[in-house]
Image (tube, rainbow, N blue to C red; front, side):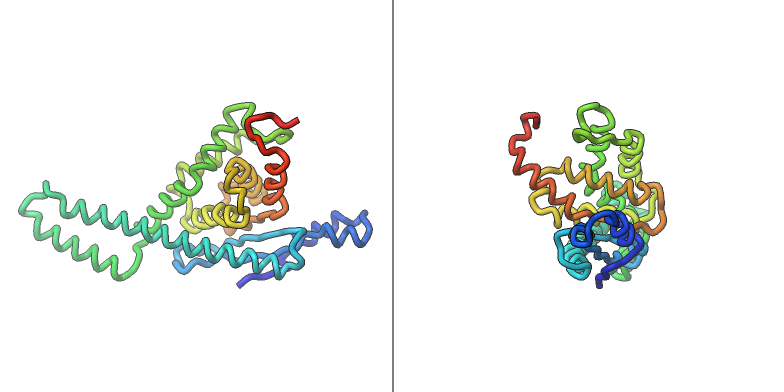
Length: 259
């Protein structure tokens, strides 16, 4: 279920346009829609929200509908990937149990362990396996973003023109992605989902991962960074997301410097 007209942020946008005419003010007010991220696996729920704002969409209801359709589809895919990783982890457990170098005296115990593993698998996903699986999937999905953070923070030519980025914040975000063992699984899930939803909404922006990484960094910064472990609200600006398509249309050759 999606909602519209959420929050204080909407009021802020309205107040900023106070000096414009009423018609211009209405045209520039972004429409807001949001969803609360609630995957089927309860262990991955954390009362996090995704918000979509756009000056192109006609209403907050429409913005919420667009966000809900994309987020629901990506959430389902992401959960399947996490469960597949859990199955891989369990397979590794079973392979260790049945390793050929086991002593004969331990054969009976190995069979009991294997039986217990099967019972655990039938009963549901164990918290330890799910935690490890979520860490692996999170690093895999955001490894490109982490690489971008390290590249930009290590060179003066990596940042977009006219943009001043906090290099320390970039390096810290890369570390939080690569060393995510101490971070809650629900937070890792929503961070991975955020990038997937941006890719889904961004259409051909998938062809420019640097642009997506730059926008993702801004979203993380506005949400307080990756150190805050409480419920998070991530806001996707559809105008900024699609502006990259306009820029690519104007500047079609990435190997020449734009004047």
